[in-house]
Length: 293
DNA sequence: TGCCAGGGCTGGG
DNA sequence: CCCAGCCATGGC
Image (cartoon, rainbow, N blue to C red; front, side, top):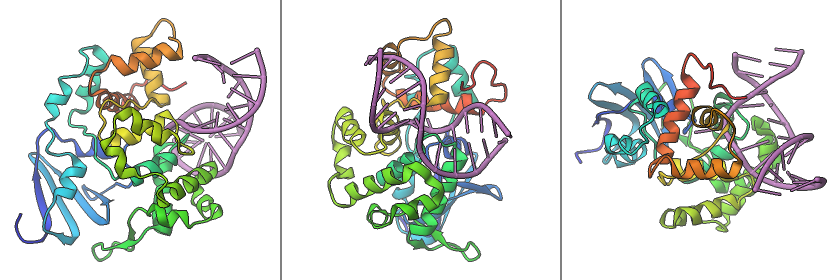
């Protein structure tokens, strides 16, 4: 690229920044004065939606912006993904509601730790817990004047040195021992998160599920949001309820048949389809017929 | 106020 | 395999 700069325009079509950053895959973004502010790795970033792309600003200069285009997946041909979705009414409605929603490519440790904190929590609460955790354990990073202290997501090594009480003080309740034990396993090398990228999805999933506080749902979130295994299909209470009501309106399938359905029906980019469904049912005004419980 | 949240784990049928 | 109960906390 050119000389190091603190601003960059990312040309991209079919990109809905708001849907992408609020759809429950990342927890460090906030909307202020018409722009999205967040932290990617050790960089503070502000993003602004444009008709033909995204304006990005940072506090520290960058010579290359691949760290950001990788994270945003702005070069992905979204149309080729959407064409693999099943042609049914729920999927059509979901895509129509938020076409331009993308899956991010997040750093595995941050994604794993965040989703360990997600269990039985609303998205706003996860954001609060993550914010506390970052402010107490994350490395300070450069931000524009007037923004106060901004912190990176804490490393596994740093959290491994924390006490359970310190973690509980971040309002994470019973999730604290799980986060702590997982941080220790990652920090001491018992689990190498980087090595999962090259392994088959099923093997990577098994390795994640072996961690305390990580079941199938959270493992699938990490496979999908950090590693880009686009067939991974997390089923939370919203998605579960939506699928029951949209695809099995008469009687509930057995858990086994339900599992087989979500693993086969939605195609090679099932995880992507799942995220459109999730965002659709969670944000639509008229939730009649599709509300959890 | 009570219900519920991007669940996982354990212990019973 | 399936299910109920429990875990902690706060938004709505």
